[in-house]
Structure formats: structure tokens, C-alpha cells
Length: 477
Image 1 (cartoon, rainbow, N blue to C red):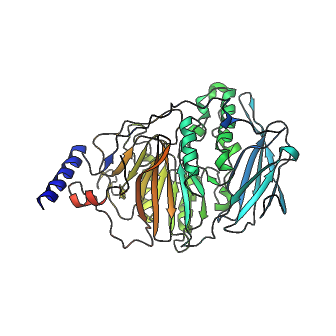
Image 2: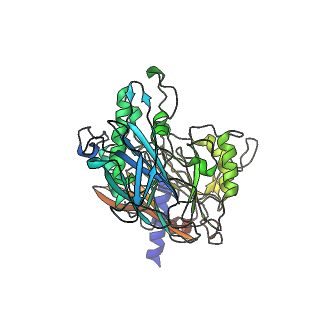
Image 3: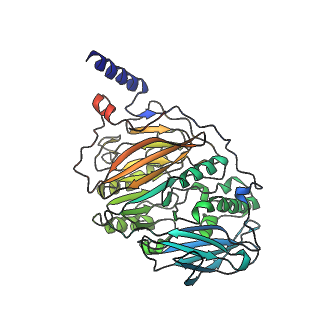
């Protein structure tokens, strides 16, 4: 008994020293330098064959997962925009014709960008497809999700701020070994905007070739970050998002959005809403009107899991980009709580952080709590901006750790959300440590709609039992 009391007292003092009930890991991954992979590296190489399709990527093409958009680039001439596909490798029963476009950026001229919408697909089916012609044709495959159903199981990956460094490659390869079926990408793709003039376009090309090892085989659900804006008046480039919008289509019209930067899809048992942190979002703007209507369309009887993607985190205790999400929080947080969003994923901050369920919706300038408080109807906020880009890690967390922050660490990695049924999902954040996929933060996520009767953690700085019970049960430091 005395030993038990001593242990609890020691643990309590540890958390008091940290200044909060959360955990700040001291681990910082330093395996690879944060520099972009050289152009001559084989992982960025152009595929063999004249005018061979390259930078192949797919995304969901409709609202419910019965379509995909397949995109690729041909460098030498337009070539064919056909996609040939079928249920057996090498046997393609259906041919679909896509569209063709290109763009210029400063004096860079893009290759020929092909985009093909493939519709009428069967759920939970593996398809094989071929693009290109003759000896330069290339073959890939993809799997469709289960039919929209409240108990459909599905495993998502979550990646943000990827870039094209050796750390990026490590994160990508470790994600590919996770068994996840689709990526929820929370913005900042290529980091090509760190270059100038024609090199901006060149680095969009190399990024597309780097990620093709995953994006050609499973859909990545894209959201845009600040590094996609590319507002460069000194180069004569003043149209935001030109490269991103030219290369990475989204199924925005399927959710009645007026802009490719914000949209929604349903996949398996999840309703996924993608927001744009760098488009107008305050009251009466197009994004605000659209989101208001989209929340009304959510049917938790069919898609119990409600997930929101954005680039700038609403809750962030890192010195990097601190409080940059405050304006979107004030615009949308009440809706997030009202509709009981399960989890919100963001990037931007080059570190990892997970919050408790909290909200700050009671403060209105003239009264109310001016700080986050426990709220069982609120989402969990998770920042996964640690993909590996050339800007490096954001290692300066604010001290003391805020009470709303459950776990934070500055190292590279990716997350997975493994939905089991309508009530439970298993979440992992995987640190890429010394070439190994290491699960560092893990917990069971209880659905806000179907699991609303489950006991919730009460955020209380001095409540020792809560501190102990809510420690990440698979955490490794």
C-alpha cells in the first residue's frame, strides 16, 4: 500500500513539474538532414519509354466512392488521355477518355496533364488499369472502398507537410507498410515554392514522381496549405494555387462546392469534410455557406464517423504558427461542437500534437470563459504536420504545456485511423525512428454519435486519477 502511494505521488509530482496533465516527449528524430532529395536520385527519375506517363495519382471522384479521378503527366507530347481498366491484370474491358490541360509558371511550361474520371465502379473491388500507349504504357491497380455503411471498417492514413526530403521518403515508405487504404492529406505537398523561377515547376514534377509509388495505387484526399498558394509578384505570378489546382483535382462538384479547395466525400463509414484555411471562410463567404449546408447533410446513421481536414490547426501549443488558427476557430468551432465532429486533422506545424476533447465556445468578448474547457461534444484536434519537409521540425513547444494538450512531440511520422465499426476506431501516430515504424501515441476513439454514452475524461489539472488513466497506453519515449 505504501509503495502504491509513493508511486502515485511520484507520478503526480512529475506532471506538476511539467506544468500540465499532458505529455511532452523530448524525442527528436535527427536521422536525415532536412534537404530535398537531389534531382538525379533514382526515386525522382522519369519512367522509361518515350512520353511514358509519370506522376500518376488518383483521388476519389464522387461523393460516395464509386468513382476515381486518375491523373498523370506526359512530358514529350500530349499522347493518349485514355484509361483502360478491368477486373483482371492485363485484361481491360472498359476504356474511358479523359481531359488534357497544361499551364505555365514564370517561364516553366508544364507537361501535358491528363485527368480522367472513371465512374460506375463496384464497391470493395480491385481494379487494374493501364495508361499510355505501346512500349511506354504503364500498369497500376487500385481498390474501391466498401459501400457506405455505418459498420463498414476502413483504415485511413493521415500525412501532412510532406515535401521531398529523405525524411519525406522515409515517412512515405513507412506509411505504405501500414496497411491503410487511403490518405487524408492535410496540406503542403511539394514545397516547390521554396524555389524560384522555373525550378518551382521542376520541383512539382519531382514531387509527383516521388509519391507515385503510393498515389498511383490508392486515393489521396487532398487539402491545400500555405505552400500551395505560390503568390510571387516578382515573377509575375499572382494567381494563388495555380500549380496545385492544375495538377491535383478534387471531386468538389459532387458535394455542391463552388471551389476545388473545399469539398466533402463519404467513404465507407466516414463523412470527410475538407476545408481551406487560405480561402475566405468568415460568415457569408462561399465556404461558410457551403459548410453550413454540408453539416446539415451529414447522416450519422449512415456515416457515423465525422472527420474534418484543414491545414492550420485550431489548437496548437507550439511556438511555430501559434494562434494562426484562431480566426477559423471563432468562425467554425461552434459548428464542430454542435455537430459532434469526431476528430479534426491539421498540419502546418512541423510536429505532432493531440488534444483532449475541449472547446472555447463560451467566450464572446464581453463574458464567458476565455480559455478552453472540457467538452464531451467537442472533437479531438490532432496536428500531423511532421511529414518531413525541407523546413525541418518545429521543436519549440510552449511551456508550460496547456491543459488541453494531451501529447506532443517534435519528430517525423504519420498517423493511421483504423475504423472498426460505428462505435470504435483505433488511432496511431507512428514515429519514424531510425528507419523503424514505431507507434508512439495510440488510443481508442469512441464515436461521438454512437458512443455518446461512454464515460469521458474530465479535464482537471489536479485530478490524479484522470492524469493516470488518460496516458497514451502504447506510448514509448
